[in-house]
Amino acid sequence: MQPGDKIADESIMSLDAFVHCTCIRDGRAKPHPFPEKFMWDEAGAPSLSSDPSDEEWEAHDRWVQKSCEHEGYLAPRVWAT
Ligand SMILES: [Zn+2]
Image 1: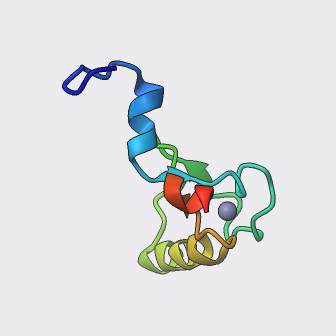
Image 2: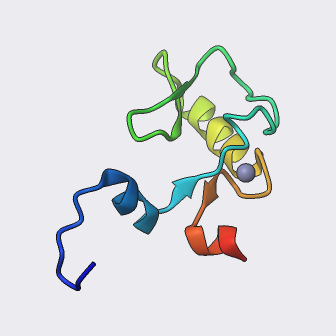
């Protein structure tokens, strides 16, 4: 690949961004506070359905940060080290 080449493969492009670790998907994360409202959004991020309240979003965000050692996200370089 030469510099300036257009990267058309989405799987390659996604490597440049933060990626989600698989702990939640693999069931290794801690139980969600509202499992009945838990969902994956269109970007593949943990989210809530059913019109959650502000308090529920706060609890959800805290859960994401504590759900596993990666805080739900992995950068490729973090994964490599
Ligand atoms: Zn993780």
